[in-house]
Length: 177
Image (tube, rainbow, N blue to C red; front, side, top):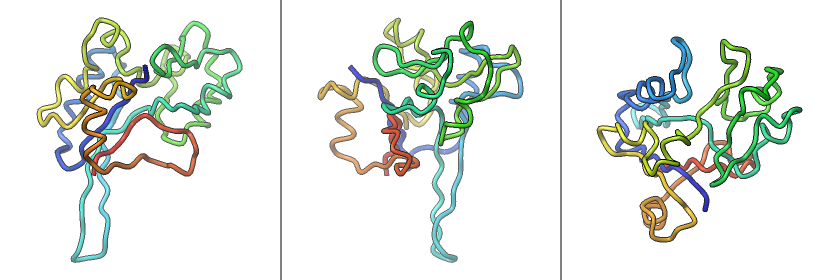
């Protein structure tokens, strides 16, 4: 089993409902976020294309944040979800520096924090909060190793990309084109 997320950049409207749902679900302190919305403009005027996408920790198979953590606080849990055990974290920031996706931040309590794919919800058989609230249903989440899962099915028929493929992290966040 390997959890992954696919985000359809043709359906995302940049409403930030995913960001707010994450903050509320995970009691994220005001001024911080575990996910965010990015808008990029590609092309040359007048032939421009806008891409809006929700970004977060990429829950990498080859996670540099896990490799560089001196205490083992950053680790890969069942299903490939990359987590941080707050009580083990010394807040050194090595994982923040090693992440090519800028997906981690220093929590006000002194440990590092990031997206967890709402592991507590997933364990209860629910979708991550961001997926559950998306008004355009542009996010797909599930076991990418299961050929019958929604995410596997959509990945078979759509073109997709990952961010920073040159980093070699094998991210598990995919952007449907």
